[in-house]
Each structure stands twice: as structure tokens, then as C-alpha cells.
Image (cartoon, rainbow, N blue to C red):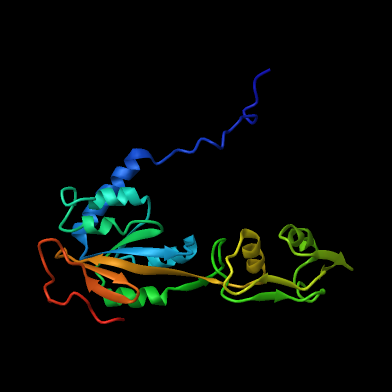
Length: 244
């Protein structure tokens, strides 16, 4: 009897990796962007999610974002003066640590600052974040009245003392979901999301910028100042700008 074509095993584990080719393509694209745009920013991000980040990208179609492995981006910029792709690009590499991305744009620093501030969005906290306010649930059926009875086992799984009473979820004791300032765990974050408490914010912050002349300006704690380069000094003679 011939084998049925419908009875075919399809493996879901064979995912094609991007590999070396994709890394080399990113390196080349970054090198081209260095020459193609007036400014290159290193940006740090917090609470990044696909939706809000896509909105930022769509609103800046005239600019180019790169987000990926930091070491690959460091290779593109150069990790030393001998390796750099353009004047002083290697100075940007030390900022590519942790959760960061690169932005190549023709926007001025002030334009970008206003744009990023405008696109900050409240979001639900992830594990490890600190609670911005205290959330308290009172004993009884009123605190969780908006949820159907089918959610009761899930609330118990998350650590809330609940039971079903006349097809309603009843909280058996007064409960602090979190207290202001404490570090949140996974279960607390899930409960807060169900209750609609947003304790985080999606935002992109400027770390450093390189302009078309190779001048580097660092942003730190609300202040901006030109980095002193080996063997050179700033054009304006002012190493530090006014706080913004």
C-alpha cells in the first residue's frame, strides 16, 4: 500500500540561523551608513517591545536603526583607531554595552531629543523592575470582580489566596501585590498586568553622538559635553555645554 502524503513528519526544530553572512551584511551596512548620514547616535533602551519600537522606526523612515549583537556593531565601527571605519568611530564602540542600538540620521540633536521624548510610552513592568507605587487588594469578591470564574486557578498559581464562591473569585485575605520601591518578580508582574497597572516606560536615551566631522559628544545625567580626543581639542573651546 503506498504511503500517504498526508502522513508526513515536519520537524519544527530546524530553524535556519542567520550565520556569518548576515553579520557581514550588517557590518557593511553600518559602514555605508557612517558615510551616508550626518550623525550617528548610540541609544540605550528600556522595556523595549516590538510594537512601540516599530512606531519609532516608521516615524523615522528617513533614518536608519541598527539593533543586534553589540560585538558585530563594534566590529563595523572599529574597536581601535587602526580598525575604525571613519574618524573617531571607534570611540562609539565602548558605548555598545547592554541594551543599546545605533541610529544614523540627519536630524539635529535637539530634533532627536524632542522626537524621543514624544515617543515615550507607558508599559507593563518586567521581572527585575522596581514598583512605582503600592498595589493593595482588599479581602472579598470585589477586588477581582472583573474577572470570570475561569481565572481563579490562574490567580492561585500566581500566589494570590483565592477560591470560588458562588461562581465568583473571592480573595481570602488582604493582600499587597507589591509595595513601592520593591523589586518585582515574574508572578507580581503577571498580576499587575492583569490588573492594568503600568509601572514601566518604553524609552530611548541618547548616550553619545558622532557628527560628520568626527566630533564626539557624550550625553550623561542630563548634561552634554565634548569628549577630549587624544592629540586634539574641541572646536569651540568649551568642553561642557549647559544642562538640558
